[in-house]
Image (cartoon, rainbow, N blue to C red; front, side, top):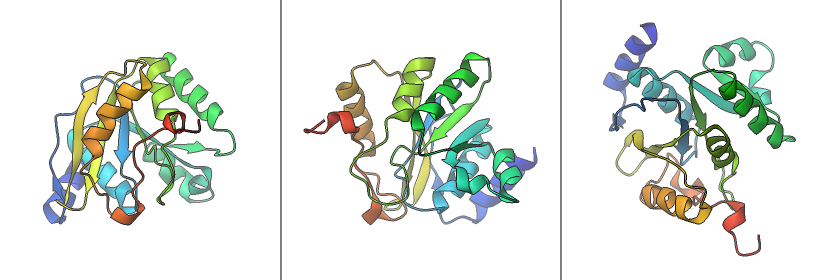
Length: 191
């Protein structure tokens, strides 16, 4: 109740407009892209709280150090040890298989800087759990943010990523110069 109230106040005062499809009706992997600024975090919380989505999100483990740890966990954070990304996928899959129900927010472009490709963890988690993928976005050119369509992955990485790329083609992110093209390493020519 308090979260929904906070989100209403946030959206009433924000320069950003929440332009979204309805919340997914079942647990989903929520892509947060383009991820180019720390402000994306506030927008993500505002979206989830406004739509009443119980979320978990992956964040680098340094965010959970000291006094910030309890706050980040209360906001749904799951610490990630970047030196062992495979373990993170296994832990999330185990949580889902154990019956936890939540939307998992993932920023596949990784850090807030321009990268060569997206990380594939979101794809592996969705395929291994049978969860659909919801395309969340931030678009500075229109000052809109929200959720786009929810899609079922087919296992055809190229075809699935073509759908994802088409959706994000006109989305610029908070800092457009740091945007990473939605492409997995396995799709690159030298992969």
